[in-house]
Amino acid sequence: MVDIFNTKKKQQTLKRSTTKSVLNEKGEYTASEEVNEYKAQIDSEPHFAKVYYQDRHRLKNIAKNHILVYLELSFYSGYNTNQVILNTILKQDICDDLTIASSTLDNVLTELVKQQLIARIGKGTYLLNPYYMGKGNWSENRKMRNNITYNIEHVDESNETSPIKAITFDFSAIPNFIKKHATLAKNKTVHPAKQKRTKTKKTETLEASFPQKSSLLTKLFNLIKRRKIVKSSNTYIHIDKANTENSQVPAENPTSSFPH
Image 1 (tube, one colour):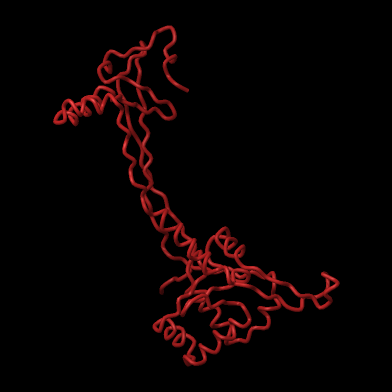
Image 2 (cartoon, rainbow, N blue to C red):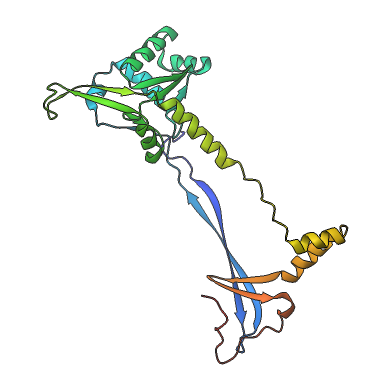
């Protein structure tokens, strides 16, 4: 039997290394030791979609076959996007799962758009109204909501506490929001080009005088400046490479050279 409700947890190795410096009684650096590694079980949340009940009356009035299609759309919607791209293959899969004809699916999609539970935002692309259904983080759903305007009509327009007659949504700003969101996500994945360091007049003079030796001078300069950093939990001890063996802290105040 395949237990669909208790899937195996993913095992992930989390590495945590700590370098600790060892000093003798005179405060001399003697050695360093490094640890640790441990494993943890990562339990991921199963596939889900959230239904919001702030306007339950609209959900109550959905026909049974419309609800089934609506749930199928939520299953195939993107995480943190609420978008469903209905190509020919996906449409056929939905029809096969619900044992309905493709014409019936098209009619239900049209009806769901009229009820504004979904919005057609492109050719074959639909958006689940984030005021009724969402998949992903609430922060992302809220961003989508902020780009959708709505108007609430009451039975008695002069009395806002009277029963709600209708709620209409305007999705016109969503396409631009999606483009902007996709651009931001793409820019985050692109690593910015490394900025070149500006050359000082002294470096330019040396390179002009010794063009073949400029790279060698740069390496030599970096080698002289190099320092060894010994990490001890939250304490960092800076020791010159040339004085590693002879570095010593005064006995009367053995911790005075440690930055806090």
